[in-house]
Image 1 (cartoon, helix red, strand yellow):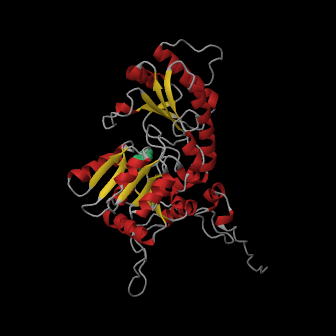
Image 2 (image 1 turned 60 degrees about the horizontal axis):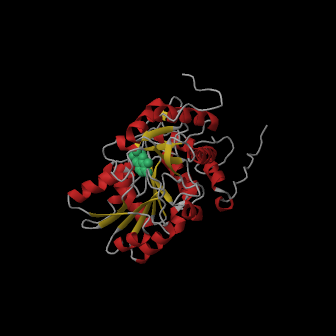
Image 3 (image 1 turned 90 degrees about the vertical axis):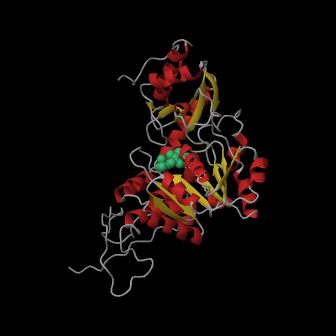
Length: 403
Ligand SMILES: *Cc1c(COP(=O)(O)O)cnc(C)c1O
């Protein structure tokens, strides 16, 4: 029996779809009869030669490109409106972006930003390659004043770990007017919460390790840009410095990206509820989360972020020692660094020597996961009360946290 091959209808155009749908749809093989729905994990260090001279963008060797990386890159690029490049880690991506700054150039960076970013900039400044200006990112006037003669503005919003909100639309506009490149570390908001390129940023940077991959099982990074020139320079950096991801890690990250919207929805809903309850907890001095009407960044965050995110910071009554006790008393929450996994984790940030002294010593950063919110509350409430002498919880039965 000879049947004509049937045609598969083309998927709808991306710009007609919401980001949640794009996260599921993008980066798949062409829809052809009997084609797989997922990209393969391409494990190959070399590729069969073409006849004659190779073209410059031919992938002839495994450091130049990989079809599993490309699948992730096309999905992330579709979500953020640019070309994405995957790197071996978030920090490798930060290093690639900082390398765009010419020798003798200047970088403006918030005083609260990812520790590794600060360490990298400090080291480059110590060698004399670049200058660094540290600013309070909530002081828009001070940031704009620091832009004069600068080459790169680095922005985190919300900042790690104190969750300050930058006036990103204004900062992008002012930086552009002065010819200063803007890179936004979009790890906390994710592309579902913020698309920096649409606000005028030149680069969006991710630790893919966190929400995008989402399961605390890979370390990866990515940069997205709509500028072909920046894309080519970052690509050359990746190839020459060898900051390349593993194909299997890239595949895991794409698998994680498929569920980003459901994970983030649940984690954010949990974070909003926990932040609300924690703000009246007797063992908590202060809660920082943009969802709270009393949070200094509340209105600004709502003006340009789609959602307050799932990282919450609390300051524990009783100081650093009480905060340490909380971190060791939790049984469901994981006491660990990092964030963005399906499992809830927490950490007293000042336990790390590199954390700036402007971060309160009693501050615990919560990375709220996707578990049942009552189980999370029960465990945290118990740990807070037992560690601060504010008494045991009244009412409610212990459930689901035996271990
Ligand atoms: C974790 C993190 C990084 C560094 O990413 P790695 O994948 O750990 O190298 C950069 N920025 C932010 C905001 C992060 O949370």
